[in-house]
Image 1: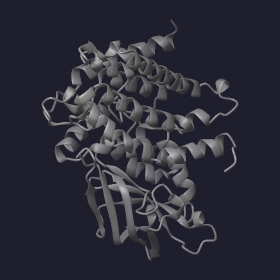
Image 2 (image 1 turned 30 degrees about the vertical axis):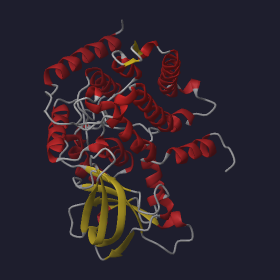
Image 3 (image 1 turned 90 degrees about the vertical axis):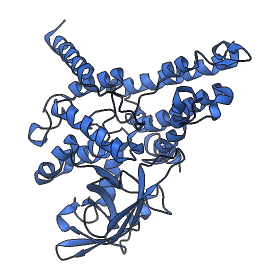
Image 4 (image 1 turned 180 degrees about the vertical axis):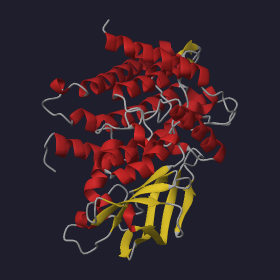
Length: 400
């Protein structure tokens, strides 16, 4: 064993020990399964305290610079922490838009002043970030954004609305895509990108209740909201290019995220475990040939996706289409997750109709809730249809 391998193994033991000693107890209320379902103050404060604790221990943003709140070490150490977090099923680090999208973007192309101003607050959970891309009536068509940003002295005046704003009602900052030049020859050239405060006059939010009864999304309204001109990132007209780069982080095609769990990990082994005591016509459902056949297909699919992820990190194995696996990752995982959860409910038989709050619901309705919540991941960051088009046109070069 060489010194580097031993150092990593020692580090893994250290992390595992810390997590075991510091994993919070069950709070006694329903915790969100992903960062898109944080809908109550008690959930928010519980998760904020947890993320701050992880960061204070030095286990979040490990690859970010020390002067910006990180540890300044190789990203492999963060990978070890994340693996141990999944293994011990600790709570999520909820500030995902900051940790996974805004933070890496600022790290990569932000000024030193922007890094000093924003990054530490993202890691410590002091500053919650949201994303202002989607708009009512335009959905994933970001090029047609209508929210306006007009320069007026030292400010920009924002008018318009955004929708599906995750944690918009709790956020201190928004990564905002707005139109600064409606007369631009190409609609994409008229867009600009802002690191916009949410705490100024003229910004309001309205929570959106989801199919599960939970919240987590809002609609956000801008009514002559004035934000300082230095919130502009990359110059006027650079918004489209920066937004596309942001989506690369969101879709997993760019590295740099601070780490931590963004969602409760649910894998095929969990599904099999929950079906062990399910019966159909007096027999274990796992003995049903049709169920077993479908389970094997799901096992193979999950394994293939997992191996594909590992392959995507080895350039020599992706030389034909280098970005094919990273860019298709979101499409494959989210669609698989939705189908796997649907299968879990179907296999429960009549019990599959029971939901959270019903004493007879299996595992408290965990799988029903997970299934209904899984749709948001197939829509956010670009729908599955949009993602399939990106892979077809921009990776494989297929005609439109």
